[in-house]
Length: 270
Ligand SMILES: C[S@@+](CC[C@H](N)C(=O)[O-])C[C@H]1O[C@@H](n2cnc3c(N)ncnc32)[C@H](O)[C@@H]1O
Picture 1 (cartoon, protein in one colour):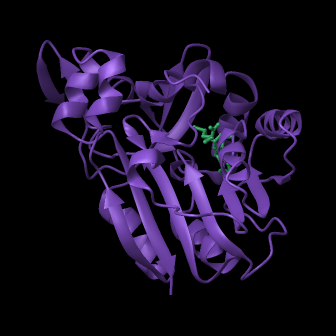
Picture 2 (cartoon, rainbow, N blue to C red):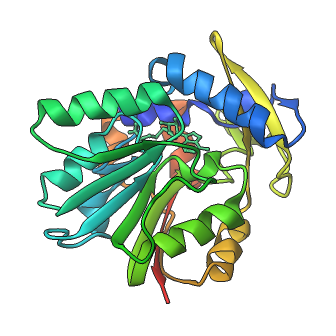
């Protein structure tokens, strides 16, 4: 996959959030807005973010969170175009499953995997809802830049725990919440948004629109604990080697030298 595409995820930073419009938390309308975005403009505007990259400047090649996945049953939440499923399939995972809210993304993932001789069970559904996934079945559930789209973090983590076997592993990445608060401007970093503000907002991106909320890191940690997970690793560091190709002097790279732009959590079901 195009290495540069992993950086585009982070165009949604404090600059865009600064021009956001507050909206009510209405699950159905949020799902409608976001699935239209991912059915139409999503990849053009945000690109794809897939393993071995967890997002900007963090890679599985360096972090080695999965270890050997051969023979393992894997479920991806918010699989998008299917590139991370390909990554796991090429590492000899026994079963590939995924859920995504967007019919178009599921279609792209199916085509992508078929062209590479891989098969996967792909389910079009919001991650928050019952969609026929088996309980106590998976060795790994993982998600690359998709968990933050959920309208119900506690419910989603509780569902994910139910899909995993005991001692199964859940790994996910998302935009670091501090990245959403701070913008690089004229060689300084400026706070644009309150870190504690988890309210929902809509942002226009080109011709598309998304609705999101920026949760605090503690909200993710506490929701994991509530769902019965123990955290084994939290990654906040950017990898210098990955910043170089983007040009060490871009506003984004300057920002990434001062604060985390991506976080990754590895947790285990107790
Ligand atoms: C930034 S993409 C990441 C996808 C994937 N890692 C890739 O490389 O394409 C986010 C994905 O989450 C999906 N998504 C958004 N809201 C969702 C929800 N509530 N339930 C399930 N999937 C959702 C989108 O359709 C999109 O495919």
